Length: 145
Image (tube, rainbow, N blue to C red):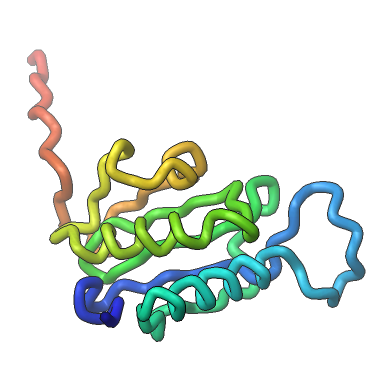
């Protein structure tokens, strides 16, 4: 099974420079974010999932909430998650990414996401097209004259 089929143009990004507070490695040492990326690749391969859409990102600027991943697609919401554990959360990340790819607009209800990606959400951003409406329209304002 290939993630490319259900997710179409979806991308899974992992910050490979993430490190938890108090981490004491030197500036160029391998960091926990890289361990998370490796764990995601390993778990996906064991499940027969081709993660050719996995993208390593040098910095995602969420240093207070490492380890950080993002799900993105040109036509869908973008999700940003942090506080992930490289030793435990790779299966949940893969499950959530498959769910994201299966949704027509990428919208995932909190309850649908694996537990590690319920509490660790940092943001859900609308697609880049400025004219796009997603989820629902806001009620029209009533202006007093």
